[in-house]
Structures are given as C-alpha cells and as structure tokens.
Image (cartoon, rainbow, N blue to C red; front, top):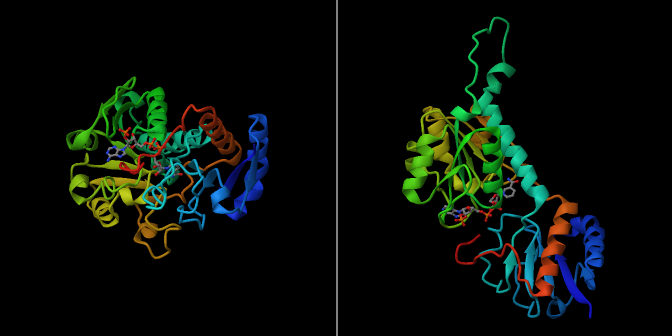
Length: 310
Ligand code: NAP
C-alpha cells in the first residue's frame, strides 16, 4: 500500500526536492505519494522546514514522524501541537560544509591572514604564526557538526578542547562538561567555535559574565545560532579587547537588519548563514534513508528530545 508523504518544506523547494526524493523512494522500494497538500488524516510522514506555514500538527493523526530538512530545530521542537517523533537532519554534505567553514575560519585566525591581506608597502615585520600544535581551539557543542569539526581541527594538528552537555570520550579531543568545563575551555582556547543548538539552556550562554572568563584576545566563530551569544555583551567584549575578533554566521534576526551594530563593527566578520547549507541531493538521500529505517522497524535516527529541545 502506498503511503502519503507531505512536503511541508516550502512550496518553492518542491520542484528541486520532488525528483530527488521520488528517485530515492523508488530505489528504496518505498511506494509513496509525495504531495504538497493532502487531507491531514491521510498523511503518513511530513518533510519539514521552518519556511513552512504548517504550525498546527494536531490534525495529522496518522503521521508517524516529521523529518526536518534543517539540522537546527528550535523553531519546531517546542511546538506543543507536535506529538509525533521529530528527526533533525544529519547529513554528510551538511557536515562537510560545516567542516570546511570551521576549518577555513579557524585557519584565517590561526595564520593571522587579515594582517597580510591589508599589508601596505613597508609593512615588513615578520611574525610567523605558531604551528597548529601550539594553538588551542575550543569547540562548544560536540554533536554531529561539532564533533566532525573538532576532529577535522585535530587532523590539522590543533589542540582541541570540546564542551557538551553529557560527558564524552573522543580521540585526541579534551572533552569537558558543566560550568567548570565551559570556563576551562573559554579560559584556555585562543579560538572558540560555537556549534550548540538554540535551546532554553543555551540561550545567551555567552553572556557578559562568561565572556569575562574568556582568554584575553579570543577569536570567536559562531556558526551555531545567534541567540547563543548576547549581542550587547559581545560588542562590549570586542570594544575592550577581551575578544579580538568575531566571525558570525547566524543571528537573532535573519537577514541581519541593516541598522544592526554588528555590520559596522571593525572586529566582526559577517557571513550570511552559509556555514552549512542543506544540499538537496544529499539531504534527499539522508531523508529517504531515515524513512526506510522507520518502515523497516529499525527506529528513526537523530530523533529530537522534546525535553532537551535538540
Ligand atoms: P547536535 O548533534 O544535536 O549536537 C548538539 C551538541 O550541543 C551536542 O554535543 C550537545 O551535547 C550540545 N549541547 C546541547 N545543549 C547543551 C548544553 N546546554 N550544554 C552543553 N552542551 C550542549 O547538533 P548538530 O547537528 O551538531 O548542530 C548544532 C547546531 O548547528 C544546530 O543546532 C544548528 O543550530 C547549527 N547549524 C548551523 C548551520 C549553519 O549553516 N550555520 C547549519 C546547520 C546547523 P550532548 O552531546 O551532550 O547531547
């Protein structure tokens, strides 16, 4: 019997995803109608993205699961009408994008590239950077993206400290937890990458108090979520030199409003939420693989914990 899969991930993206999902479903031997609209009580699965107008999941009484096309699920995880299991996207191309973004921006800071990009005639004071093995990088968040990025930094030779909610043992990464662990990472690392989800517990994690514990001259890279860092506290920390520079990919309001002080700040680099895009071909394969697992009875992968919010 054919199942009904509702594509609630933006009408504009349906033309891109439809052939990819159909091909994947056919290949996996899954008989399914992939639709943009259906009577809610006929829908078996929902593919979702925050652009969707769908907010009330109550009438989807038959729906077995909601599969997000985004890794960050803060805009749906707290939806009280959503009682069905929710899976976030963990996908090889998304992960590779984040690895490349993090590695590139860490190397920018590590090598001091900016000083050379703006070099003028007569600027000749050779100060070679240390080797990566003499540089400590902190990664806050050791999930799918944090772990992959931390591992890539280890492969470059960096000393990597990581921080997560639950204790971890990862090869060549010094793993920390709790408030003490966070202070240790912030106080030790010269470059910190934030790859945490936005939840009640991580909102404003880097506030004025915690930023005061950062190693002076810290370089901060935030491809996680804008709300992890208190905007005003970051500006103050940059102005007093506690933080030397910040590269921000995500913001409380996106696109970042033209009048926001981040745009004009000389110690901030802004990238427009491009760290790790969902790439349709790879994402469609990951979604179909998860649907196939569910139908085989192997359980949904990457299920979001409603209580933790990620
Ligand atoms: P994930 O696999 O769910 O990992 C989240 C990590 O954060 C886990 O290590 C988790 O700890 C840790 N964490 C959560 N709450 C915490 C807390 N209160 N204290 C300490 N650690 C905490 O997520 P992911 O797939 O790596 O993605 C991370 C985030 O990246 C997403 O939520 C999204 O916001 C962002 N993102 C951004 C882009 C972009 O283009 N900029 C693209 C994709 C994703 P445990 O391991 O102990 O559970």
